[in-house]
Image (cartoon, rainbow, N blue to C red; front, side, top):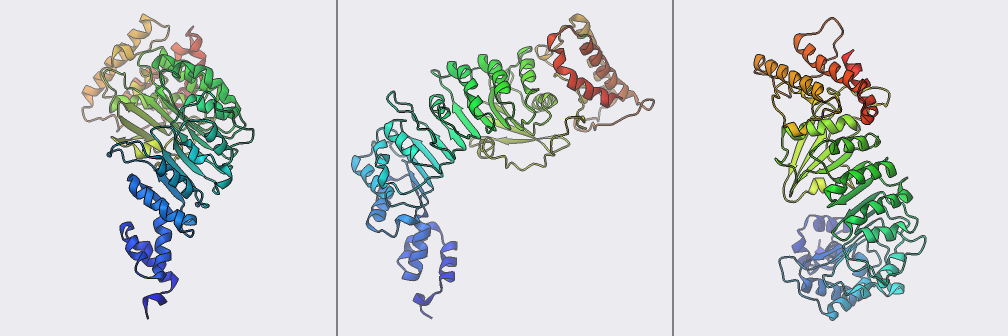
Length: 483
């Protein structure tokens, strides 16, 4: 049997297992292999070498059969090479190649000069309908007209700016868009037309961070569909007001980030108050870069437990410290840690794809307290679940309006915790399971923890603080455990 008589199934199998750099050689082997090899070779055109990209475009323009094979097309320069300005001849060849790609689904164009949106200007000759697009181009007249022609676009990222003479999008444009990643001014352009965004990501800068509080109320137009909101580089002085507005405008979010977490009370308690209104929040990303010392290990676990008390639906908490990010995920019984340095491949997908492997249980019913609740609100009360904890920074304790009396009670409780730790040197903070104890059958260590919780409940009931009403849900849950 000659190679020309190879059945298509065999050719397809050979090409499937072939390495990508061997595909050009397979194209020259025989006609039976050529077709299958070309389909795989041109399915994705992605090379940081502009000479390779130019030759691929030349082949597509000269050979009509190659254009329909292209599904993903990337135009960019390798960051390790010189970012030279590309000649007009190169962009003309890219434009002609785009006219041949009638099955194109994904397009990425990275133009550092922001001067070549004209390659997308000839709308009648563009045969494709994109589903995903990433651009480093300005938002100008040519670009707006191109977007209006893309009715199937679902994911859209752009790093360019807004031109002053850019027209408004026509009503009905981008009706299928679900995910947008771009500057605040461009997000305003999208919200000016009816859309159904589910995932929104906005990087702020010095010019736009002051407009954040004015922008958030505009999210009311997509409140019914928006499930993920990622706002990076939020100034710390705006974090409290921003999350208050977000919890009021978009209470049904599943993901929220990146909120700078205040180190001191009462600002952190204001973050807690906002979380009380977000009953569907699953993922919360926080920036603790400015904390000194930086929270790690046990302190992060305490902060995670504290946040979980105010928002029991949370399954993932991400702490950002500089270039490092730490993911805490709840498996139904305890919090586990996942650390990623450098490229955050798993964490970066969290705002659009909740596919992180964890055995998280479904949120508890509103009328039944979660069985894993072991402490009352605030960092102070979570000490009851940590018998080996003997010290805590004084500026992180919150005594409400009870003053010196509450502080004395807390110091007495911490003293009893230290005494307990000395009597049980082998006890660890992870070996303290939740126990439902009936009255009259308490052990000595159980009495220590329940005395602290009972004192806290009494204090909150008689507190004159206006925010005390926000803790009623947590008080009822603690009483349920106590009884």
